Structures are given as C-alpha cells and as structure tokens.
Amino acid sequence: MPRALRLFCLGLLCLLILLTTLWGAMALWYRLPVDSLWRTAAASGFEGLGLATLWAVIRGRALRGLSTFCLALAALIWWWSSLTPPAEAHWSPDVARQVTGTRDGDILTLTDVRNFDWTTPTEFTPRWETRSYDLSQLNSVDLFMSYWAGPEMAHMVVSFGFEDGAHIAWSVEVRRQVGGGFSPIADLFKTNTLVLIAADERDVVGTRTNARGEDVQLFRINTDPDTTRALLMQYVEAANRLAAQPQWYNSLTSNCTTVVMTMIRTIVEDVPLDWRVLANGYLPEYAHDQGVLAAGYSTEELRKRGSITAKAQAQGITPDYSALIREGVPVPAP
Image 1 (cartoon, one colour):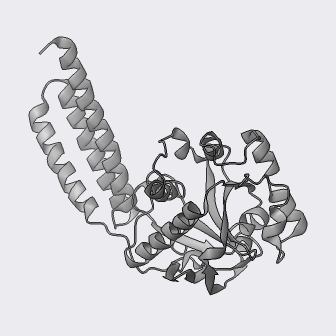
Image 2: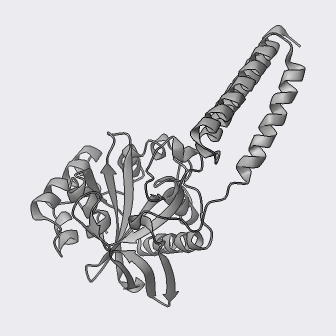
Image 3: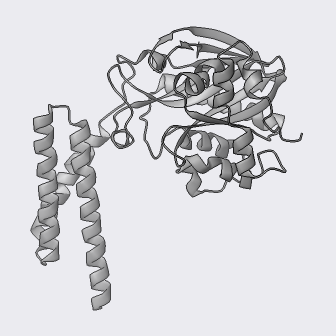
C-alpha cells in the first residue's frame, strides 16, 4: 500500500476511534441508570479504553487493543439500542398531554388542545380542550420564529388559520419531566421524548411574546389550499403516531424544525437540503429563497414588519390577540 494511502487510512481509523470514544463516554454519562459516581467511572473507563486503543493504533500495535475496543463498543451499542422512550412519566404540566385528532369529512376534531393562561414563564392556569375545525374553511398558514438564544437558533411554531378567525398553532417540543429541563447536548443522548403541542395562539405564541419576552417574528406563508390542508393533516397524523408510539427528542435529527421539514417533504416534491434547517434562526432566509414569503420585500424588511413582541406586550393577551399581531405583517398575494 502506498505510504500516503496508508497514512490516510490510519488517520481515518484514529478519527473513528476518537469520535466513537467521545460518543460512548457521553452516552454512558447521560444515560447509564446509576448515580453520578458510577456514571463517571463508566464513562472514564470507556474513555480510557478508547485512548489506549488510539495510542496502540498510532504505535502500530492495533490488533489486540482494537479487538477489545470493538467488543466494548458492540456491547455499548447493544445497550443503547435497548433504550426505549417512556409512554408514561411524571411530565411537566405544560407537556403533560399529547394532542390527537380525528377527521369526519371536512370536520377535524382535536383532543387535548392546550389553552393555558400564562402569567410568568413558569406560572399558568392550565386548560386542555377539545376543539373542532372545518377544513373547508382553512385559508392560511403562518410561521412564527421565536428567538431565545441569539440569531442562529429559534423555536418554530406553525399556525393554521380559518375564515372565522380561528387559529390552531402547532409546536414540536421537548417533553420534559417535572424537575427536568432542556439541554441541546443532553438531548442528543435519549434524555427526553418528543411531544406535539396543538394550542391556541394566545397560549403557545403569547407565552413567548408576553411571559418570556422573546423576540418573536411572524411570517405569512404563500401556499395553495391543498398544500395547506395536507400539511395540517401531516401534523395530525404525526401527533396520533406519537400518542401511539413515543419517540426520542434529538437536538439535531428530531427537533422543532427537522420534524416539520420531514412533513413538508412528504407533500412537496422539491424541498432542497440546506444548512439553514440546522441553524434554524436563518430559516426565514431559506423560505424567502424558496419563494414562499410575501413577494416584493427583503427578508430584513419581513423580519422588521413581522416583529410582534413589542406589539403583543403593548396590547396584552386579549381575545383578539391573533388579529392584532397580524396587523401590518405582509400577506403573500393569492
């Protein structure tokens, strides 16, 4: 084997050992069901084995060390694949229920629609409702981007509007347990499950504009009626599947953006892959490039006109909240 090719293969093997060692140590640390002392010992032991194997490979003594490492890695992968998301747990009250839906002709009935009154980010009056919607009256779909950690990352909410002024907003969220929280790193390692929330806009958007004071931006989306209805039903079907079979939340592969993009790809043929799906704070620029936002405006102009937090805080969470936050926001031409 030529020396350059041999060095390339050696470097690739070393990188693979390093990455699997890092993954394995973190998986043991985050998910091994023992106290922190034993988790630290297990993670450190696997890390030590990986580094020893790496050193043996570099020195040309790979066979025995690599065999031991591969056996340990296989056992770890077997254990990892056995972890299943719980169907029942002591869920945080705001994600305690998974919405489900049934359709009878044009009538869509949703059970466990969230309609909380939020006074602070952690204090609320809980209210779960059953609501019905006439799909023949469905006439709009809107995108809310709520910025909570700088311009690169945001939480995405998709809301469907009806001719009578009703809206149903959908949010893909982490189903935390009481006392738990959200961590982008921990949630790479089967820490929390996924939940689909269907809610009144005064709840799921209002808590972000008023209770939390996040920078929420509204974008009106240009879609035809058939695509709008198909996307709404994709949400309903995904919610029903989650109710029947829980799924792990993953910060990279199963989050508020990737889950929705998967739905869109089932009903729209050409949805290009793009780095802005991961750095989802730039999703409006992606949507603008795809021609689904109001024409004749730059993304910067649409962000400015769609910034609704100050407006929402000035008027409060009133019964006409949904209509007021849309005032002055550009609407795509039919």
